Length: 594
Image (cartoon, rainbow, N blue to C red; front, side, top):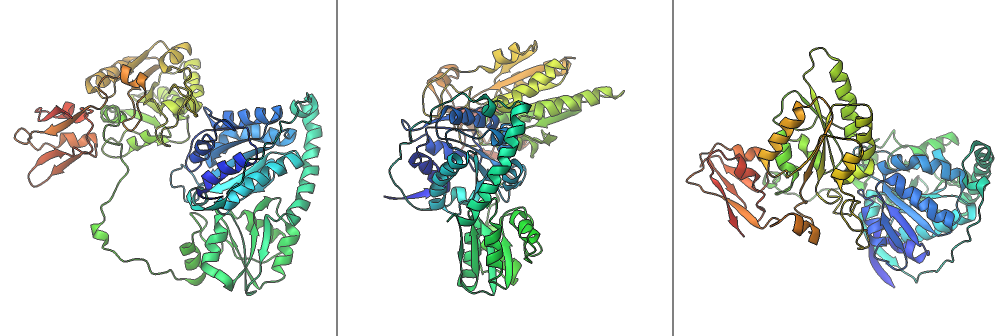
């Protein structure tokens, strides 16, 4: 049976065919669809969203120790969060096969950095595989499970954005029902006390020696000999990028098993070609190893050190030319700057917060990061997921040390980010008697990555209803006395609540609670928020005075005719949040029922 799969879909299929029984993840582009598609194999695989990547990996570690085949998936920065259990699990080894999927993002299209997680395999001393297309994604997931169990180790499976999202034909087979491995209590293996880790550390080195032998013989690494003038050593998606440029005018060493690297195979290949190009994304991971073997090669002396190593990049770097692109009139292309959606419940809050003086706004990772843009200018920093409240606390503590300080810090994050690692940050504020203003934007879903469930949404990944962790009681349980939950679309309530928080000399928490406009509303949503987006707004032109104050809300449904000096609202986008109507000084914007 053949199917058209993205790389992410193929990984899910590979997990199904390999007999995986449990999988856990935290959503993050470009990895999100891996677990979402795994969840479709309900009945065969239990797939669960975790509050963060560390917990996801720990879930999967437990599943492995209990005897099931399992995986955890995450985007590249998520592995930073999960690194603590990763390094120790390398020492203990597995019971059931265990794969950690890292979806790296060369070009950082939707990420705060561009790190190369191949370095984690070397750092943690665990084997790594790198698929190049959808078929390899499925096949390598199955092979990785076998490697994991044969060598008693977790395996890192490294993806990149294009491999995650590009589609290809995949040959599919039936599921292999792999029996659970017996759980045997082995404290010397699974209890990471120093006496045990000293022994296990030596086992890691012995394992690495065995894996080096494996890397020389596995079909995951292979050569394709054509013209010997150019030799390309590559891995992952870069292999096909290179083939598109060089075709049969080059020979190739394709590396699918990339830790440990096959030294003898590299040396043998190098002896058969004249000029070697190492093409990879992003760090010189392979290049440095090739040079350590005393082999001359071209890598980042030829190619750019950042971004995707796409065919046009390779062609320009090697040949100084690019293929002619389709011509078009660039002046006719309308720019699409990033913006909060029409009806976004974050808009009203940022509109009011952006007007505050002497304020440092500590932001976080999510849709609401767009609050830093015009017209809000409502963010000073955004560093790491879940860190806004910790960073805000540190900033406020130093501002408080200044004799003439008038600065107040407002820390902002979303509900999913709060459950991710924000709870720890907020705990830090109350424990250290901070006086920052902390805001949780509760839009009832994980919005940025495509509406995945979280501990506050009321549902598990595979549709089962579950307990809702309510934000306000949780915050109060941490010890906060000054807590308010507000409707962010009510600008008067937002302004009054900010005034209240600014007047306090101790820490406060504001919870803005209103569903994401794009969310599929649950029955609970409909009961709590009556008439959700059931109206539209329109501008009465005869009343509009052309002040353009409504445009400062940043709503994409609004436009302003500079000639006529009139505002107008696109009915196809408007959902009747009423923020613009509250801003209009002459009541020229009115609500009408759909």
